[in-house]
Length: 386
Image (cartoon, rainbow, N blue to C red; front, side):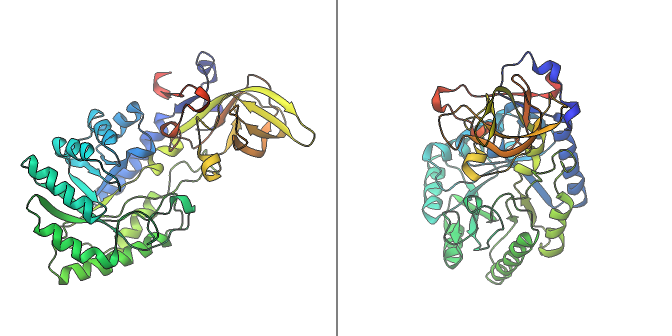
């Protein structure tokens, strides 16, 4: 989505801030993944709904034939309502409530990714009450680190996610023995925004070690779910808007030893939707400080929290101006010092009323918005509806 292709004239009639989703970029991204899946028919991709649950975006992804990865009962419901088939829905999360488990059982979803022995017993108990058998995969904490932000690393022994390696055989034995549980496989997820493929190689090596062990124990591993985590290029959304899907899938093709009849599941989220989305905001004021020049915009950390929460970088562009560049701190109106989108940002000379695009915001943007300071939630629009 390059600067000149934003439909600025149409933006003038829309209240800012809002999310703008370029469906051409989204569909090209989905087509790129589908081409990889055609080369690897034993692979299945479940879109991680936590990245973006805008119903219009979900319908495009479900129509492309993908499954859904959910981490709450609300996401399970959103997936089904958006057209994802129940037999392609997987449900993870360390704190599934009884109500959420019952909802997923009623929908007959494909699989629960179980994160503890305690959860396994509750799913069996609730399935028994419904006279059903719940399909489950056990999420294993592989104790594999990822080169990413500490707040989005999930595969270390110190993290809250999954069953530790030293406990897994005991839990598998229990799962196989429970009458209302069908044990189908194992699940992993080591983190998010991973760009170094060596992290995924390390995951493959750990999975291979475990599957060889389980094979010797005669455990029936029908599916292996390696989660997601593939990152995007936040610095170059115009020229590198398609993530490294080929390299990503090639790692698993080369390094993970699937047995005949096994399926390999992926849970991609950010890499599917990040680059198609931009947060569009208007400039309210230009403030000349003693040693800083501020562009104060009408979007805030309530609309896009990643810079405040993770110190995340997003490319920021003035899509109204072609004047020479000046340097600004781009800040929002929220009453917090952390309400900053970028410091020392070079923008075309910026004026009150200019449109600013905060790029690569399709993932963990609209979905994480809040109403702090009693601010309204931002709306989301598809390019094809403007």
